[in-house]
Amino acid sequence: MIQYSDSINFDPHQLLALFKQADWACDRSLEDTQRMLAETDVMITAWEGTKLVGCGRVLTDYVFRASIWDVIVDRSYHNQDIGKGLIQRILTHSSLAQVELFWLCTRRYQGFYASLGFSDKEQTGMVWDRRKQPPLPPPWP
Ligand SMILES: CC(C)(COP(=O)(O)OP(=O)(O)OC[C@H]1O[C@@H](n2cnc3c(N)ncnc32)[C@H](O)[C@@H]1OP(=O)(O)O)[C@@H](O)C(=O)NCCC(=O)NCCS
Image (cartoon, rainbow, N blue to C red; front, side, top):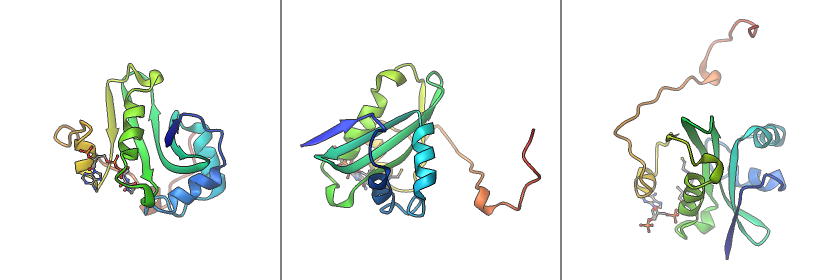
């Protein structure tokens, strides 16, 4: 039976193992992942016993906007409604009840998100990727 949690008190090595299955996250380090966990506003995880089998996380102002990141289900657990369970628990999380608009970017799985009520008709996005930029002047201030 799959159980869901919003606690970040778990071994981050398990998260790294999930990240390895996603092309955008497979190079993440333990140190960066630990800092990310500490700074993430809402983290939802899915567990079969002590095995982490899915995750999704939110950055938000708790009122106007929330963005959803790193929705990943272990590939041997796909198509068991775990991804849906993660997104539903994000959208109904008590701390996010006032959020007006949830935003996410995805190049794949539009069908998955559309089945959960997401639309690609209203929003456009642009991205600034530090890894693709020339070096910047020293940080301000
Ligand atoms: C996308 C992902 C999270 C879906 O997780 P999942 O647990 O397999 O999905 P679910 O079983 O909860 O599926 C929920 C619904 O979406 C549908 N769905 C799942 N994958 C889909 C896809 N690739 N395209 C269209 N619909 C899809 C399912 O049929 C199901 O519909 P239903 O409720 O009508 O039966 C999973 O495929 C994944 O981890 N992919 C790799 C990481 C990734 O690319 N994440 C998205 C980046 S934003």
